[in-house]
Image (tube, rainbow over all chains, first blue to last red; front, side):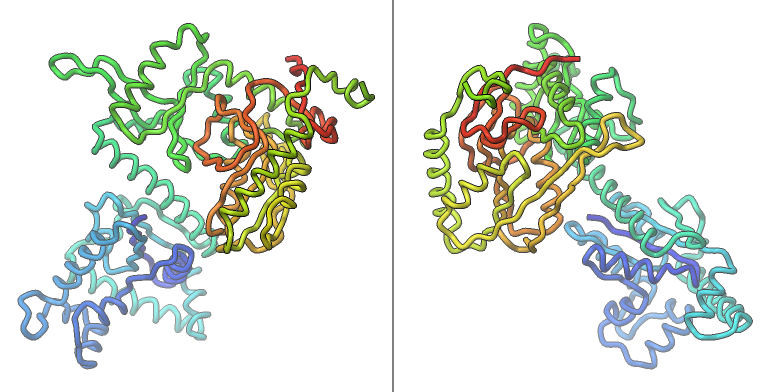
Length: 319
Length: 183
């Protein structure tokens, strides 16, 4: 579950992507319109118009409040993000990437497109000519800059703050949503695993790139791919023995973690008689980290699996 | 020895027709009791579970719906092993239904994991697994097998739906056959 901020250029289809993403994830979009209607209690239509029209008005304070409209907006968005532990949350615009830059669960997306594409989109959307679209785009961008300057006093579109930048010149809304969903899913996995590491005092290796130690591991990864079973390679290390000073003297880094099955697999290419130490480590992991599913794939298991896979040529069943 | 038995080079019968019949009846009764009052869809994993599924569903005394699912290994340009894909998906809607997946044999559980992952995408109420044969020593995946007929070890078997190179499924019992020679 993730907090997704979407920053977009006008006419880049950012709104359409946010709405399609919300529909796919079964959540809602927190947009500026939503914020104005829900963050300030009862608000009279005149104030609502001014907030919609003038960024400067965000610097003023609502009656009876010590905080400005901008401060309230910031506080409410941060509150929503911190409460969104078990659900996805999409924040569209409003400088979400800046406000939530310290939130590890958040993914920051920027949607861009060339001026030509954006003008086309605006012209089609409002049924206006391209010349009129130029004017609409200029006004929208001027307003946006003012809004940002008033609220943050900084540029909120620098590339470094985004995790993913999508260009809709060549990508459809659906393709963008697919990309975001996949990123959200993997990011969520990584964050969850990182949290379990912090809690259990195991060591996080997730930023390592995959570099198999031997051909068996590589072959096993291919078999998992063959069955469309997602895996992470050596994502963590379990310390299992310490010396008197608390230094780790024995540890195990299982070769594979299958998130869907919450299962760690350790492959061994050694003969059975040499695996006693590995078995001991497994036993210690189960004792020291209760609830951890960990299994050894012995050489015999692996060979047996390969033998049966050889039979699986197109039409044969395997198990 | 019949022509079929001879062609399969049967070493010994592990489970006779009578033993299988009694076990299927026992499983059918358990499933009937467990799913009473629930909307149950029983899915046959083709083709190995064909005979087991046929007998088991007739031993379940409930208004069940039945369907089949098939899978195959198709060539893939990016890997030597190819990829496993569903070749015959379930046709009936299993959303919010209780699903019982019927397999012939579960060893590593990789296939079962693949199939249940696919079925889960259709959002059934739950998925329960039933297999005729289970090798508890070789199972890798954390898949909950609620019902199984018999445990087996690493022996190679055929009969009662289980094949060796597509032959031997129509043996009425489960027999041990010689292990395939490695290349």
